[in-house]
Image (tube, rainbow, N blue to C red; front, side, top):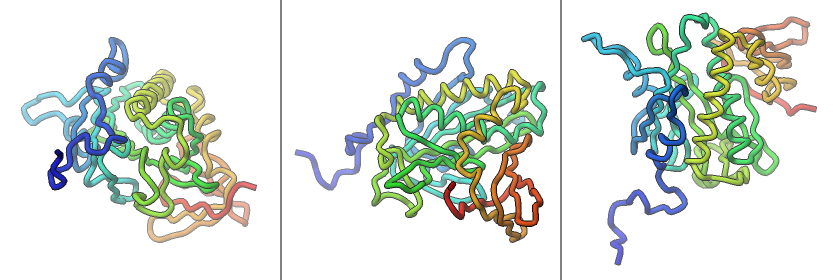
Length: 292
């Protein structure tokens, strides 16, 4: 008989089995492909912080981790989002991972700012296929799903430079969270959005294959968002465009207007009542009304 006071095992919650690291490696790592290594850890503070440390060359000249390194955690205890917001979720309730990208000399550094938006497009595309759930993007990098007719945030993306030539992109997606487990009322999950699949192995393979494709096309176009059709794809899936928004900008400034475009640098263009157009590259965006 099972001891009710025994510590929780990896299998104590049968709807949340662990990821199959070996199968993920077989399905994703291939000659000539983007993904070069994949590790799953039981828990860590932040996969972004851990992978950024791996990316940097050692003091003894040891090279940093190669492009395509993937680090996945079953649980994050100090996950970080934009504006240094902190979040956490129950173990094995979502996908929490980071990837290391080294775009190379062909991609100008000023185009690295497209990487979180590219990742958003890739995640949305991958989940639409693997989970059968409609998703949208809130500028710049929130993943939205519809729960009971309302938009809810089910995931987010954080990109950080790791040295001169590397970018670590972290992704967090709520997969099986129930309503009582949500960190805030505005949050959501794939389960609450009635996804047809909550198998995290399947979802992760779909997302990483989608990211490999979008990143490959963007890099082949030297990071050009028009040639790679990234700008077009992002605009098509962006729920922020056409909305009245409030942009909370650095320095406690605010801007209210209609989000009318995403420009060539990935900035959100906000048109105010006086007819001026303001490109917003950093800040917190609040949707004030739905699209008419």
